[in-house]
Image (cartoon, rainbow, N blue to C red; front, side, top):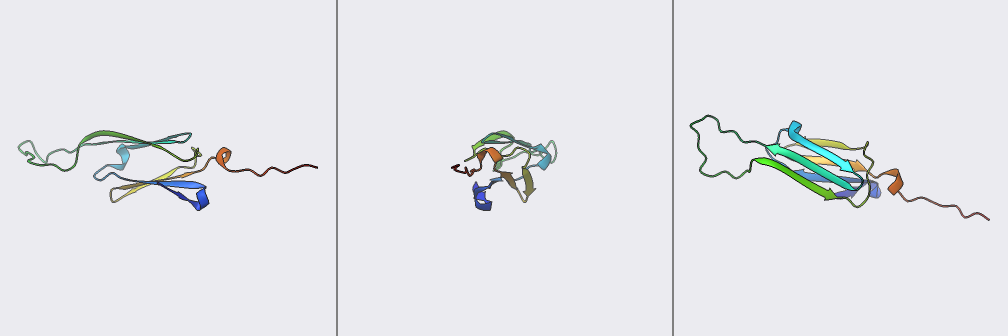
Length: 103
């Protein structure tokens, strides 16, 4: 997780190797980002048996608390070579505002 564009956006990178991008779900709510997915590992045929398997199969869910609320309509995600990259813009309500002092 790191901030981008002078703190007006945040980028989250997650390693999720062997996933089908259609099985990844990304949700935002206020200052939370949830990444869910399901990895299935099917043997090549019925006679195949694993002796050791490094990757786990099944569902996973990871919730990140972000340093600010995000604009839920600004999210972009890409998945390449097992790396999921999610970019979220800071919500307008979370950006600093200038207040004029009246005389």
